[in-house]
Length: 143
Image (cartoon, rainbow, N blue to C red; front, side, top):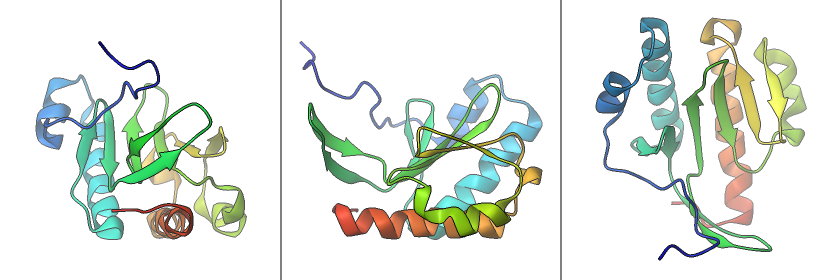
């Protein structure tokens, strides 16, 4: 029986290649995923682990009001309308980098939505991911 407050999204043993082949992604989406996997692995120095349909990198332990557990330190997902970049400690403190990023939308404080990778500067995105990890490490143990 599953615990009431257990995360439904968990790491899997599915490879990035298998995942990209198993879903109905366009060639452009597959190319974007490969570019982002390379960028995130460079910044995190961690191999990509699929968390359901999310490309996850690193791990941290969190404690909330109603639950605690382990979660990816950062990651991204290829969603129907945009690429979602997850910066776990939020993006409010990264306004200077965000103004130079390009075209994007924010949601929930921790999600950065990008229509196409060509819409943003990858070097700025790399700095955002790196800064997000640095901030997360100030609050949590990241591995």
